[in-house]
Structures are given as C-alpha cells and as structure tokens.
Length: 454
Image (cartoon, rainbow, N blue to C red):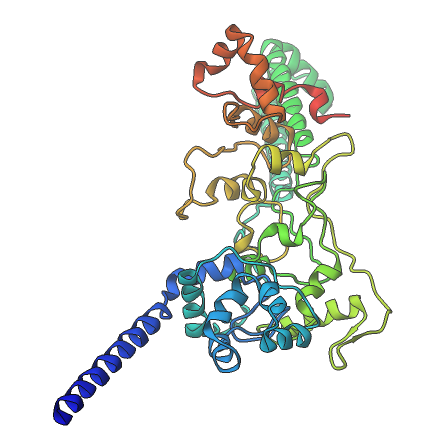
C-alpha cells in the first residue's frame, strides 16, 4: 500500500511539474513578440516620450519588463502600459515610485493589447542605436541635389560681341565695294552715315522690317510676362534657421506625429511654429544629440528656455528663438489649415512633401510633391499631380479641380452633410456634378474668388 501511495505521489509530482513547465513555456512564448511589428507600434504609441535606450520625457524602456517583474508583477506591467493611473490608484508601490521619480508626469493611456505590448518590447530589447553618419565634406548640399545654372549674362555679352563683329564686317564690305566701283570708273555717292544707311535699307526692305518688328515686340512681351509670373514664386526655398532642427530625425526615425509639435493645425488658420516649451517636453531630459553638432543644437534650446542641464533647473531668463518663416503667402490670400486638415482630410505630405526625409523646413518643388510616396506602401495613385509652381494660385486651383469630396459619408450636421442634403433636392445639378463619378471642391465653390482672397 505504501509503495502504491509513493507511486501515485511520484506521478502527481511529475504531472504538476509538467503543467508548470507548460505554463512557463506558454508565458515565455507570449512574451516573445515580433520586433518587426513592434517597431511600427513603438513609433506610433511610445516614441513621442520614450527612447529605447535613453531617458527622455519618460524613462528608457529597455529592461522595463524585467524591472516590473522584479519590483511588482508582469500582470501590473501590462496594466501600467495600458493605463498607468489605474495601477497607481490601486496602490502598487513600484507604480507610485515611478510616478514620483518622474515628476508626477501622467503617462497617456495606450489602446494596445498584451500581444502588441509584447511586440513593442521585443523591438525595444532588440534595439541597437544607429551609428551617426558624418556630414559630407565641402559644405552642405541642398536636399534637391546640386542644380547647374547657366548665367544669362554670358549669353547677352556673347550676343553683343557678335553684333559688333557683324557690323564691323558689314562696314568693311561696304568700303571694299565702294572702292571697287571707283576703280571701275563708276560714279560713287558720298559715304552715308550708319544711320542713313540703316534707314535706306529699312525702307527698301520695309515688308521684312515690319514683320520682324511685330515679332520682336510680341517676343519681348512674352518674356516680360514670363518673368512677371515668377514674382513671389519661392520653390526650393530653404532658409538657414537659428537651430538646425531635423525633421528626418524627429518625424522620420523617431516617428513623432506632425500634430504633436504643430498642435494648432487642426483648430487654427495657422499650423504655428512650436513653442520652446514643446521642445522642452523632451529636451528637459534629452541633453545629447546623435553627434557633437546635435548636442550643440540642443544646448541652444536649453538657452532659449533658460534651462540649466547640469542642475536640472530653470533660471527664468529666456531668449526667443528667431525662426525664419519658410512658407509665405501674399497678404491678400486667405488659407486655413484646420479647414483643409480637419474638413478636407488633407495629409500634410500633399502640400509639404515628405518631411521625414528633410532637415529644416523647405518649400517643396512641384516634382518633389508629385514624387511623394512613389516607393511607399501607402502611395495613392489618385493623388493630385501638380504642374504649377508650389504656393501659386494655379497650384491651388489644380488641387481644387482634382480633389473629390465624399458627400455621402459626411457626418450628420457637418458642412458637407448639409451640402449633400441640398444637392439631393436638386437632382439635375447633382447628376451633372457626378458625370465624372466624383464631386470636386471646384464644383462646390472652390474656385470662387472670395473663397481665397480678401
């Protein structure tokens, strides 16, 4: 009987150990995650406040899972990522310690599940910082590449020299002909002045001279109109800024949303330049750049905010950052960012290009805008293709003529919903609009002068 009991106990122990092993393996597999999936999730949800390996607005996340397991539990680790305030309210000591150590900054609740958290932290644990690429020698190269420019002055000088040569040759030829006639015994008229000779020749060939004059006047008018059309056109304008801010680093590598810094774009006419306080949300704890030049630029932000990185304190002596405006519109032109971003649903890339590949701001060329997203997975073949220079009236008109409005899906009570209800009562107009299977902004009044001009 005793032997039987010992046998049962051994079997029970083996079964228990087996179950524990299965649970451990299951738990371990759940915590593995996919770093490739985690990268996108990290940039979308975490990158605005966290670095994987450095303190930022929030702490470095590498090793965070293990720290939670050591100081609290893995269950509370998942709960903390989803909603930190709920774990703090529940009285978890480690959660309250983190909250107090980081200045009682409230971490935004994240709409992620456990699997997505596993993916994020798999990416974080596998993260390795990229080596900084040294700047090219010989000075900065414009992002659009080096453009060869031919000086028009050279061609004007060359043309003037050729005219002088032609005149001189013509004079010598005339003198030789006159001398030849004298030697032949012919009566030769006295030499006329150049002006008199020109008048005589023009009258003799008045038909040709008249046509040439009309053609020359038309050509000069056309060239003048072409030059006048370039007034106020600033394509590829990229002014030097007081701080060499890199969109490529912040929006590209770190995945910070444009609206985090330009936070008025959804509710104001202007996108606004971020205040130094927005910069200090991160740079209160991020003091070093990817290289010495980057660290020097961050120091300029600290100086503007009156912040001492060594003592982690503010002096109260601030200094304004004198940013240079990049996108300029005439005073008589009205443009509203919130109308286009919120109501129209226009992506920033449509007008500003792919800033994830740019440093300081630049007025994109027509070619730049047309090439945006060509190699991206989210490339839209139906996006507007521009032919007019950026920020000109023709550029805006092209967009209004090609951009469609989804009236049927407009939210109840919205502007486009009211337009839709009106068109439903006027079927003739509605059907005329839908002849090309879409209703454009132009058809809804987007070409009316008063829409864009004061």
